Length: 227
Image (spheres, rainbow, N blue to C red):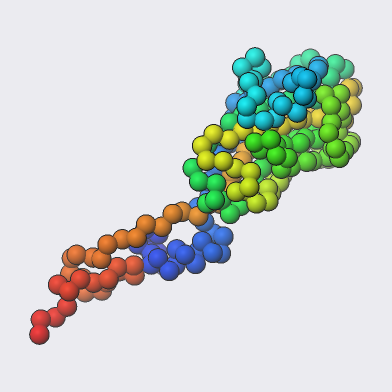
């Protein structure tokens, strides 16, 4: 069965799809993206150790590299060769663009992580995986080792996307944790995306005669039979 292009579907059908949450899939950034990163040998921001995860913080002095961030597992990206026996955390930041936050009906962070992480969008915590509750310092650790190993990608839904997203530039910040100083591996990579409702634009009535009018147009008088 052949289906016409969505651009020719009746407006009522498009509205129904929107209400059912079947809007357009939109990726805000992909796996393998470039991030700024800071090795957890100290707090990433002082005197306030939470400033680093807010949009106004300058990370120009941080290192930069592509995900995955890893050691000890068969991933590609940025290998953190000095982490084992030295520090347990890694701090990541990257920006992404959003046209209209209110269009997003769902938002999901899809991530592979060994061993744990916390993610913030524009300074608001949105995901916490395999780490204790509360504020965790640069010396913090995950709640334990993850399974399976190597880590696989999992979906982490973010509730009420419009409450954390902004029009224009947005910031995601991630603190990655190892289970302990002697851990044999670490990895983090992620993508962010969701489903957004496309803005519907009203179409003027059809000006050309047609035997069978399309679903979202009103036939003009020129298409009716002469008296």
